[in-house]
Image (cartoon, rainbow over all chains, first blue to last red):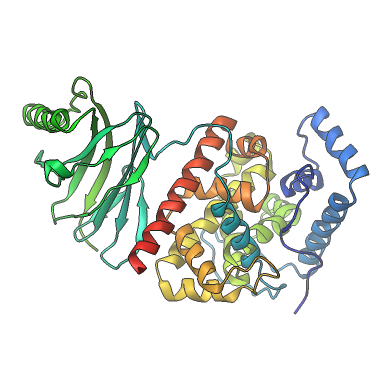
Length: 258
Length: 166
C-alpha cells in the first residue's frame, strides 16, 4: 500500500487560511484575478499551515502521477474497467465529523431561514417515508409512489391555524385535516412538524399540496371550502389564497411503484 | 482511448478529483470510478469546458455531484451504506460513534444534491461562502439560504429518525 503524505482533508483550519480550492487553483496556474492572486501569495508567505497544506497537495499529485492508473475513456464516454488504487486510509470519518459538527452547530448567519417551498412567509417542507422504510426529504417535483407516507413541516413568520390540502392528477381534492378543533395553531416564527402522516394511493400523475394558514380555525375551514370550490371550477389552476390567509403550493409527481 | 487534452487535464487535476471523491465516498474503488466518470464527462463536454469557467471550479462541481450520485446509489442499499460507514476509521477526537456516521451517511443520501453540495463545500472543504458562490456561479445570498435549508432538512430528518426509533 502506498501511503500518501498528509490528510485528504483538513480537520482543523484557521479561519483565515486558504481553502483547498484556492490551493488547487494556484497549483493549476489559474488566474482568479490579480488582487486575489497577490493576496493568496502573500498569505502563503506568512502562513506555515497553508504552506504545509500546499506541499501535501503537491505530494498527493506527485504520488498519483507516479502510480498513474490509466484512464479508460471509451468513445461515447462511459467508463469501463476499474484500475485499482490502494491509497491511504479513508477520510470518511473526517467528512462525517465535520458534517455532524455542522448539524449540531447553529445555522449559518446571513440570509433568513428558508423552507423548501416558501411563499409569503409560509413555508412547507415535505418528508416521505418510503414503503421500504427509508425517510427522505421530498423536493418539489420529485417522485413519490403508492404506499409512501408523507409528513409535513410548516414554518411561518406570522401566527395562525394551518391545514394541508391535496390535489391529485384527476383534480380530486382531499383535505388532510384532523378534527377542526385539532387544527394546529402556530406561533409567529414557529416551524413545526405536523402530527400524523398521509399514505399515498395508487393513482399516478402530477399532484399538488397546498398549505393554508389563516388567523383562526373558522377562517381556515372556510378557506379550505373556497379552495375546493375554486379547484372544482378550474382543476389545473392554482387558487388564490383566500382573503386574510396565506398559501404555499408544493408540487410532486406520483409515479407507479417500482 | 487516448486524448491529449483530457490526458493533460488528468495529469493536472486527477489527484484533486480523486482526493475529493475519496473524502466524500470513503472508498478508493468508488473514488476511482468517480475519476473515470468525471474525465469521461470532460471529454464529452470539451467545448463547454474550454469556453466555460476555470477547470478547477468546473471539476469541483462535477466531482461533488458525481460522488453524491454514487453515495445516493449506495445509500439505497442499506447494507452498503453500513459497510461504507463502518469502513472509516474512528475519529481521533469528537466522540462520533459508528452509528452516528451511519445515520449521517443516510441523511446525506436523503437530502437533495444541491443542498448537500453546498454543505460539503462549506463544512468539509471549508470554503468561504464567496468561494462557494464562485464555484456554483450564484450569489452569496443564495449560498446562505441553501446552507440554512440544508440545516433545517437535516435536523428534521434526524428528528424523524429519533421519533421513529423511540
